[in-house]
Length: 201
Image (cartoon, rainbow, N blue to C red):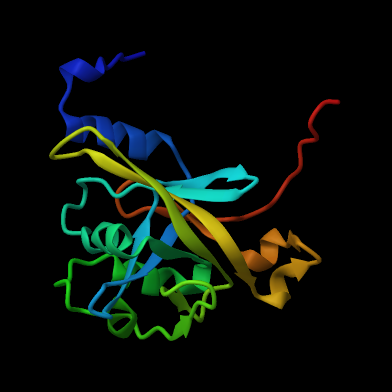
């Protein structure tokens, strides 16, 4: 067993250990709009749900990669964003939006995706996504500093948009959802055989 003391290693090495060991991570495909009306779309794998009442999600832009700064700037300015769920078929489009683009470039257009407007907020939705959340900013918590610091964005979900084909009431069929997960480097995973472990009483 090799031990790494965080004060004794570089921040980038701590990032590599985090991203290599906390797997698979769900992908939050975050849609925002600048105050100038330019759509932005970028994936974040430091993403998860953190509360159910009220329904709350978080994502954390980090210094890696540095260029993905437009999302955070837009959320700070507008206080709204969407989370779009990435299924296997959307993987290539999601990957395209992870590239480095100038802040006046619309990643929806670059990836050939259709914009659907949110109803409760002013932020774009990926029309092709099997589900999306419309979120209002609750809080931004800045953690650490350059080069690998994060800004953890907490948002309250004010509306869920879910394709009927993956629903049974409010239960989501996991096989039909077909989500992908993020691993280290260029690796992703796709849900294979599902199995159940019942929680003890």
